[in-house]
Amino acid sequence: MSEFDLIRRFFTRPTSNTILGVGDDAALMRVNPGMELAVSTDMLVGGTHFYLDTDPRQLGHKTLAVNLSDLAAMGAQPRWATLSLSLPQAHDDWLQAFSEGFFALAEQHSVELVGGDTTRGPLNLSVTIMGEVPQGKALRRSGAQVGDDIWVSGVLGEAALGLAHLQEQVMLPEGARQSSLAALQQPQPRVALGLALRDIAHSAIDVSDGLLADLKHILDSSAVAAELRYDRLPKPAYFASNSDETDALAQDCVLSGGDDYELCFTAPLARREEIAVIADLLHVPLTRIGSIVSGQGCKLRAANGSVIKIAREGYDHFA
Image (cartoon, rainbow, N blue to C red; front, side, top):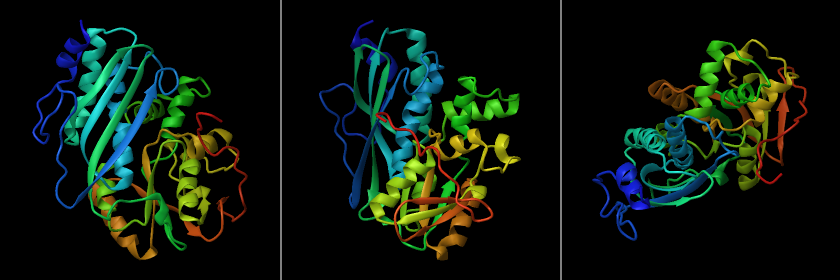
C-alpha cells in the first residue's frame, strides 16, 4: 500500500465547511466574520505518551481528544484538524481502527480533517487543530485576578491512577480499573464547558501535565498566587474514602499525575450561581478548590489549615 493509498483509504472524508480539504498541496478554509482563529498542536510519541500495544481505536480517539482539550481551554469552537503520522508499518487493521476512533470523536465535535502527512518511522502521532472564537473572547492564562475562585471540572487523578495500575504500582479492583483506564485511554475533552465559560471565567487551562504544574502557568502568566484545599479536590472514588493528605499515591495522582484533560479555571465569586447552572446543564461536575491571592506560588492546605508539603508539581519532558 502506497502513502497516497493509505491517505485515500483511511483519512479522506467528505467535507462541508472547508473550501478545499485533503488531496492538494494545502487546505483552504474560511474563518467566519468576527472570529479569531485558535490553533494548537500536540504530539503523542509511542513509548513516551502511550504504550505501543495500546488499542488503536482508543489511540485514535485520544490523539484528537488532547488537541480538542486545548481549544476547550481557550473557549474556541473546533472546526478543522490536520494529522501527521509516523508509522513503523502500514497495517490495514491498525489503520482502520485508529481512523475509526479518530473520526468518531471528530464527528462528535464537527471537526473536519483537512490535511496532514505520513511517513515511515517510529510511531508518532501529531495533530494541529484549528477553531474559532469571537474576537476578544478567548479564554487565556493571563486573566486570573486576586479574589477569584479556582475551579476544576470532573475528577483529578483518574488517568494517573490508571497508569499506576498498568505500571503495577497498585492493583485496582474491577470498577476502579475500568474507570481509571477509560480516563487514561479515552479522555473526554470539555469543549462545551469551554464555550459556556467564555463570558464568565477570567482565565483557564486544561490539565494535561498535572493540576499544580498547569495551574502554575496561570499564576505565572497572571502574576498572582493561589491557595488550594486538598480536601476539596475531586478525587477518584478509589481515593475518596481516604482524605489523608499523607497518602503518597493519592497526592501524586491528584496533584501531579497529568493526562486528566479537565479544565482548571478562575472566576469571580459573583459568578458561582451561573457556574452551578452550567454544571447542571452540561452534567459536568465543577468543584471550587481554592482561591487566587496576591503574591507568588501556590500553597496547598489541609482541612485544618496547615500547609502540605508538595512532593512533585507535574510532568516535564526534559526535567
